[in-house]
Image 1: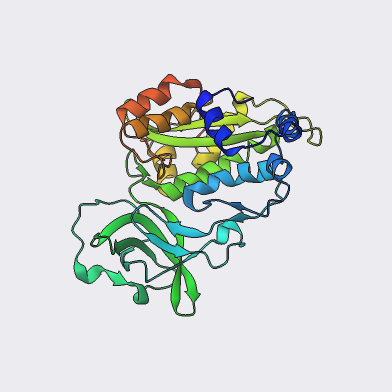
Image 2: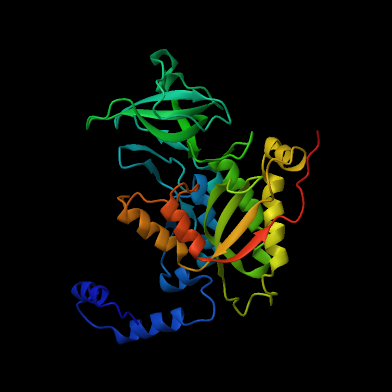
Length: 346
């Protein structure tokens, strides 16, 4: 039952005739014990799900597969931003892990700043020598670049902030895989953890949630240096899915599982982090703070009130705003720490 008056008024202008039979059918589907496969039940003629599944957005793939029961392909069609439409995925039915975009040269003029594989941090105001810029026809397969664009609307050599990797060519047009955003980084000492590394470690940890019918709804992070040694803090919002009658009975998600998630993340982080943590002792145990349901919706509302675009909003993967940290910490309902040091071999 929709009780919001604004929503009811808006829908009433679209629905010319009442359909009690359809209303009862939708109510029956939505009242089921489990919403597994609900997309296929509500829209039985659906052919695919169009969604962004690259970079850190790939965290939503398990949820989409849960709600579609894995029956619908996930299609990522385009690469675009508010500044410019960049390119298309010429193989929209490919596996989400293999999505690559072919840039369209008629949409803007593209140049690229060469990067090392782990060079995703830096200063946006840093002056880049013109002779360092690489144009579209001179990029090399396997190499990493930051995208720079000049548009018809007036942007001149604007740094988009995306890190791309050349994966191949379509005829002579290079194809790019989206890696991550620049400058999303956690650092306590000599360690530097970028968005891609953080995402990979979290995906490794969330596999431990699957036997408990739990999904990671959203996450963000913070480098806490208020104590010595400092440590990584990861905020998780977890949804406990009601098992369907077809699923096996599962045990509740206990503290030990979340502690194992902490160490699973640390084991997946890079050599320098594990050395700082295990040998140098300059980084403390990683911490997961589980927040209440709806916390990340409140976080989005906060950033939108501060001027962020609702159309372009993505959950920040590293929090630096005091107001955002205050909101997150006020919603924490449980704390978990890594129970041991991660593996490190000198």
